[in-house]
Structure formats: structure tokens, C-alpha cells
Image (cartoon, rainbow over all chains, first blue to last red; front, side, top):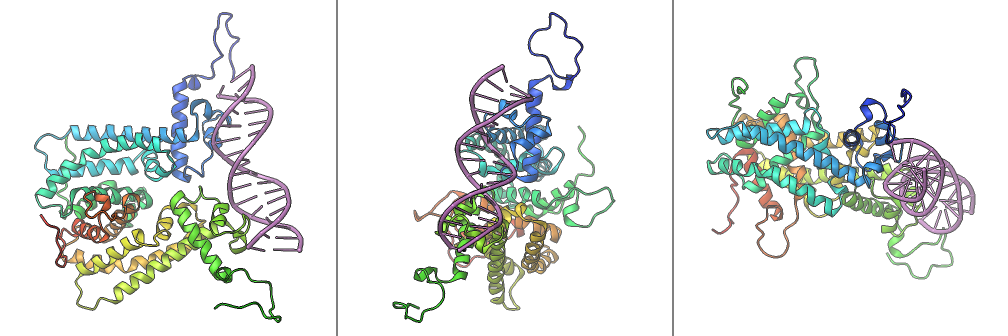
Length: 230
Length: 230
DNA sequence: CCTACCGATCGGTAGG
DNA sequence: CCTACCGATCGGTAGG
């Protein structure tokens, strides 16, 4: 750390370099690093020391921001759910009254796949696969967020059920559809730059969306000719 | 086999009580206890000491049977896959040439749900959710078993696809169907004895099978006889 | 399979 | 947020 001789009037503790000045920024850095490591190696297998090292902190310093390791896990999940809800709301806000249930389901599925597999997609997988490591109290927090997220799905599935395009009780359909999508985290790999890939785990998210809709609703993709205008 | 007071000629080290005499039995006991604990609390969160205590051993004794903790995990998974394959083979052997693809898929799905959620169903969930904790070499062992298990599904799905009952590329259909089924481990709870349950996570495995088939193939259950009252 | 034990790691804290 | 540290736990082993 290089600082010009502090002016005689400088107060408070000396600041570090420009990038490290903001406390909230450091906290966010910890959450992001934790999300990455929890996703890669699992919660139990990741030490708080590793997380600290990733952001250039000393071993004990994460506990200045988070009382316990568990609180860091909770923060990762909350961050993930808030992002997912925000994206879903934005996507749904774009459709008008006239959009068919099929198209609505497509938007919901595509958004969920993006949250699970797209850029910055460490948070939600951690939420899905590290649920066990939360305390009972923490689970309630996440459950509330998750319920809010899932609420948007029920009327869409109900409409498809009523029109005979979903031969399955709606609550079970929701659980199994989420299962099929959430499980992609286990096998999906983004398509490389080498042009076409025929391996099923290397398709695009759009192709995966088509496949999911075909499987669930029995309707081959009526893909919109181009992406809808903004 | 009960032995009276040992004859004067008895050889070898003294035996323990009747139940503990068989070495293979003790090894199996460790595997079963490990499966239960790994399923309940996760691999990393389970100590070898706990597993030992569950079968009445001292803390270091599991390492007489298994070189490392990881080997115990592998043994749990191998046991689970062997059971699953055996059950699936038995179930498939019962169908003749005339069985429709729909019925074949029903048998496969029902068997998978049984393996995931039925009695003694700790092994496969451990395999699904603790994959990360295996070494690369161990993964190969399990991958081979898993490939064998999944082989039976492809022709059935292909037949459904060819007849227009599966609007989805077969390899992706297989992955997503397994996802929907495997995910049930996260939410399914066996129905209690209190008669009917309306909560979706409390249905019977038969009802769950119907729901899955309806969702994937778009065909309402051609279930024999008993339909719920209105 | 038990007894006795070790080195390493880890979550977390006191104090500044 | 760093320094310095602690108590607990854990996987694993030697030797019988």
C-alpha cells in the first residue's frame, strides 16, 4: 500500500487502494467468491480461508463481515433468489394480455435455464444443492423467496392443464418441471466455439428450452421467427 | 447356526456374539450405516466416527474394512447401482414382446421411483447427490454401472418418439426425465397412514408414476380400475 | 477389530 | 480488517 504522506488533517483510519475502499464492495466480493467456491466444491468442502484468499483477505477477516460461515451461505442464496426474481419479473412484464400460455411457459423456462446455466450462474445452483446446510430459521427466509418466484408458474400451468396440454396435476407438474430443469446443472455444458455440437449436453439454451417445452406440453417448438422486439 | 459352549478343540480367535461373527456382515453393516448417514447429512458432514458408532465399532475400526472414507462412499454407490440394475432387469424380464412402449416406460419410471423413494432407498440418492466427492477413478466405475442402467431406456424412448408421443430429442428427453424423477428425492414424502392426502408431496408412488407419464407422453393414465371419487 | 495416538485443518475470537 | 491464537474435530495409522 503506497500512500503519499497523509495530510496533517487526514482523519479516520487510512484507506486502502481505490478499489478496496468500499465496505459494501468487499462484502459483495466475499459473496461472489463464496458462490463460486460453494458451487465448484460444495459448502462443507470449502473453507472460509479459501474464500478469504480469493478476495485477498486474511483467514479471520470474513468474520468481520459475516458472523458465521452459514451466514455467508445464506447471503449467497438470498442474492441468487433476488436476481432470479428480478429477471423473471422483467421477463414477464414484457408480455401483454394476448400472450398464449405456451409462450408464457417458454419465457419462464428460458429464464429459469438462464438463471441456472447462464452467466453468473453460481448462486442458484448453490441454493438448490446446499439447502441441507442451512439452519431451520435460514430455510424459512429462502422458502419465502422461492415461493414468490414459483407463484408466477401456477396460473400458466393451470391454463395449459385446462386446455388439455398438460396431462398432469398442476402441483406435481410444477415440481417435476422444476426437477427436469434444475437437474440440468448436473450435466449441461455450454456449447464451445467449435460450431455445431451434436452431444446433448452441448446444445444452446434456446434448443434446450425447445426440448423442454416439447417434452412437457407435447408441442413441437413454434419458435418465434426472430426474437420479439423490445 | 448356534454353537454351544466351545469345545476344548476350538481354534482361532474367540468369536463375538452370534450376530457379529461374519466379517462380510460387518462390512455390509458399515455400508448400510454409511448410506443412511450420507443420505441424511451429506458425505462431508458425516464423520467416520459416527458411522463406526452406528454399528458399535471403535473410531478407527472402519479403516480395517475400507482404506479411506472415500472407499466407503464408493461402496455405497456400487451397492446402490447393483440393486437398481437387478431390480430393473427383473422388472423388464416380466414384459413380453407385446408390451407397448407406454407400458414399458411405466415400468421403468415406476422402478426408478422405487429405487429413489421406496424402502432401503438411501443408496441411489447418495450416488446422485455426492458424485462430487468421488475421485476421477471412482467416477469411472460408477459411470459404467450407470450407463448400463440407462441403456434400457433409450429404445423405449425412441419408440415413443417415432410414434409421435415424445416431442423431444431422445437424448435430451432421457436427461430431463431422469432430472424430473431424481429431483423427487428433494421433495417427496411417503404418504402417512391418515387416509387421503391432498398435498402433492404426499401422493403414492403409483400416483406419481401416472403423473410423470402424463407429463412426458401427454397420455392420461390408462390405469387399471381404481380412479379417485369425485 | 481395539487401544492409543498424531498431524492437519478448520471455524471462530480477542484485541487492536 | 490484520495479527495471533485456541479448542475441537477429523481422517488416518501403528501395533497388537
